[in-house]
Length: 207
Image (tube, rainbow, N blue to C red; front, side):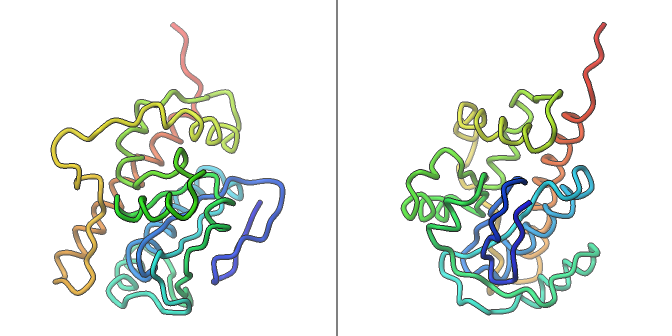
């Protein structure tokens, strides 16, 4: 599988599915979401997935927000020693799926790497459309996720209600409740992703 160091660079190997989570500074939403997603996918398919994160306006080497560290520790996730990475076109092109924190980041990602248009979603958008995407239940997890990425663009549809509901709340420089809301949004989205994978790994019963 592909693995990375703290700087977010891929060590290229032939196997594995690569997910890139993108925020702005890469010190708040994106590292938390990436580590939570890695944890959940490792439960279902150990060693098959590599999840890294980066920021569109990151200062490389910056540590994670203290409030995010506390949220991560509460969930049993280690973010100590994580350092922010600046996003670049190569990192985008090497990812099989790009999940961004909000629509403005998605625009920046696609501007930087136009070929990533079909494989880039906001995290909440991806979780929203996921239950409607047909599962390849006979495939191994990596193959199933490659099929998912190929099919998912067909299911894009405007969210009913406010378009901003597809954005993860950015809590920087805001009160603690903003961090709680961010955490709840990420948690809900990743729970939906894990549920899709769990159900996909169980063969359908024929009546």
